[in-house]
Amino acid sequence: MKPWRLIAPDLVLSSPITAIAPQLMEKYGLRGLILDVDNTLIGDDESDVSEDIRKWVELMSQRYPIWLASNNFSDRRIQKVAESLNLPYRSRAGKPSRRVVRQVLEAMKLPPEQVAMVGDRLFTDTIVGNRLGLFTILVQPPSEEIVFKPTLATIFKARSSFLRNWEIWIARKSGVKI
Ligand SMILES: [Mg+2]
Image 1 (tube, rainbow, N blue to C red):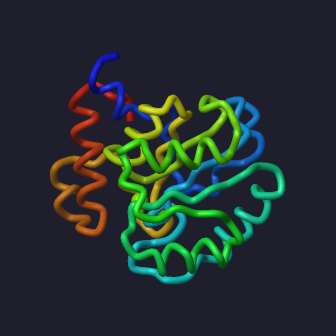
Image 2: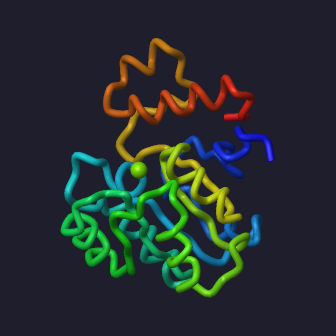
């Protein structure tokens, strides 16, 4: 495997996570979801989940098992989000380390290729998903203006998504199609 393959998502969405519909799940043979939390389900400066996200989780969790796996060290924050959505969760997941996400996958009892790891960051969410053989989906943060092909200028302009844009810029320079 070429090293840059680890930072190449299987699917790149230029929209927030709510674009993942049952139709898309079917198209890629997906039966479960592991979701990042900060800047995937909720802005990292927000404390409550939006109505859009709540409705999306309600719809999707009727059909598919959904787990949250967050690198956030604040267990209280992630627990609050998880409880408000009625989803099981792990905080302090240490992505791109495999340990916690592998435990989540084992709890789901699904083959890795049928589970999507969904997140906003290449160097944590995409890498851990690819390392475990999951289907990896990069999404747009819920509250960001769309800067999907960041240039060096936009990387430095959009401070809140600096790391994310920087990672995408590196990936594109490495030949990843984003
Ligand atoms: Mg995130």
